[in-house]
Length: 499
Image (cartoon, rainbow, N blue to C red; front, side):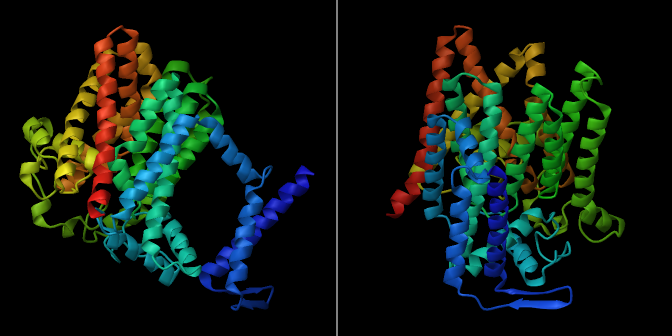
């Protein structure tokens, strides 16, 4: 019976794919064994009905998709699921007053890339549009989503692409929460960490953007989770999956190479600690080969461009077109100095204005980690943004003190998390040195660092409790509540003000 059910599920999946293809491309026209198959007329309502029926079949109890969703729900408690639902609703509130081109990064270039694929059924050259130098995975996926939305008659496609981005971002949250649960066992502190991850303000902004960042975050978090599980449990399959997902992240955005480096560092540490009997050479070679293949495919366009000595940087093809006034200082003081006064007094930052901290690496990094490089210039939002900045400094101090208090065993236990902070930061500093523009300093390039930061921050609250430092523990809870409250006010206020 189960075999017949699985065969039926496969057949319905194939049928659903055929319906999707029809809706996307308005028919079929191909040749099989010399016979032409051409179908360009089909009752669209009937097609939509059968497509919905296909999803109904997959969602029935006992079918693979239903079992998968049920297993996902089992991973999370009701408080965690409630926080995720609340976070989704807050994102919809943000979406209600945020058009696709508001607080966005190069969205026109991203859409040109997608529309080129749809028009030509091929990938563009590096210079065909502003973003066309990026690896193609996100754009191929979004082109498919775009064509389906258009095929079923959706009018406001860009809005639904923003919703599509939010759904992808929830994959990042799913794996981020699973990583949290890998390091924190106490249910109360899991809720604290999950609330910070779901309601982190820049995450709300990034999730509603059309661009390849959001898929990069999702893949990176997935790869990091499987790497963490392999490091802790030693199951070979998890390392294979981590390597494969790392390769996919490189094919989404070149920043994914950092995840490949974290995989390499974690494997090397495990080899040093446990030896080759625990970590087979064949496993290491296979994982390295997968990541190397992803890197070759992901960087091939830039490498070829560099060998041909084409105009533009081999890594960022449009860097020579950046306006002169976005470039900043590139001396030691730009990386070593932190301007505390401007960080506290200026609620927002800007890649164009010196007085808002863009000249200093740490100022711009921390500000963009909170509210990106954009602003909502309402009075209540300015107050909320300032409070968010101050509370972040409280979190940062707690994180730093906790890090320096970690013993050797705890450092080993948290090694993957620490690699996930150190390597992205090093990569971002090198990138900022290579192309000394304010936009090269944006936290969005290393956003998955947030997972490690939140886990270690929450551990600092736990450590305060375990050491009997009640004042610090209560201070951490109050700071967290104030931070979350400020974030909610920040994103709800513009919707209320408009009404």
